[in-house]
Amino acid sequence: MNKAAVLLVALLGTFAMPSQAVEGRAQIAKKKVSMCIGCHGIPGYKISFPEVYHVPKLGGQHADYIVAALKAYKTGERQHPTMNGIAASLSEQDMADIAAYYAGKKK
Amino acid sequence: MKRYLKFGIMLMAMSAALPALAGNAAKGKEKSATCVACHGADGNSSLATFPRLAGQHEDYLVQSLNAYKSGKRKNEVMKGIVAPLSKEDMADLAAYFASQRGLEIKR
Image (cartoon, rainbow over all chains, first blue to last red; front, top):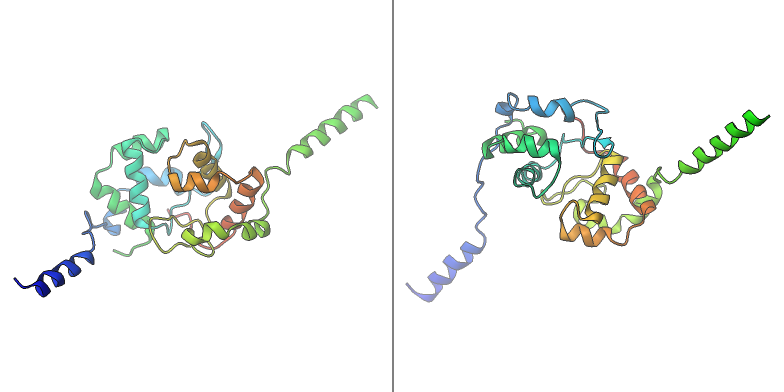
C-alpha cells in the first residue's frame, strides 16, 4: 500500500463519527414514560425532599443529554433518590427511547 | 398597641427575608457572557453536551448551580464556573434563562 493511500485512510478515520450505540424511538417511548409523567409531566410539580424545587422540564431537551443524565443516575455518579431508583430499572434502549420522546423527535 | 407592634415587627422581618430569593433577569443577561459560550445565546445550546437552559424552572437552575458549587453534582467545568458566583449572581442568571423561550413541560 503506498503512502498516499495510507494517509487517505488515516484522514478518513479521523472524521469517523462514533456510531450511535442505540437508536431512540419516540413512538415506542409513549408506553415507557408512565414513570416519568408523574413528576416531569405535571405543571408546578415540586420535589419536596431534601430541598424544595421544581422538577426540571424535559420537553425539548437534547436527547443525548437526557441519556447522559439517566446513565449518571444509574451509576450513582449523580445522586437523587427517586431518579437513582428509576434509572436503575431502565435499559439502554429504554433510555434512548425516552430521551427521543422528550427531545421531541417524531419517530 | 402591643399586638400591632408585634405584627409590625414580624412583617418587617419577613419582608427583609424575601429580596434575596428573587432574581433579576435583566441583570442575569448582563452576567451571562460565560454561560452562553456553551449553553447558547439565550440558553438554547446546539451541542447535546451542554443542556438547554432556556425556559427551565428558575428554582431548578438555582438548585443546579448550588449543587455544582457544593460538589454534590460532579462536573469539573461547572464547578470552576460556579466558584466565583454569588447567591445574587446565581439568582439573576437563573431568572434570565428561565425567562427565555425553550424547554417545556411535556406530558
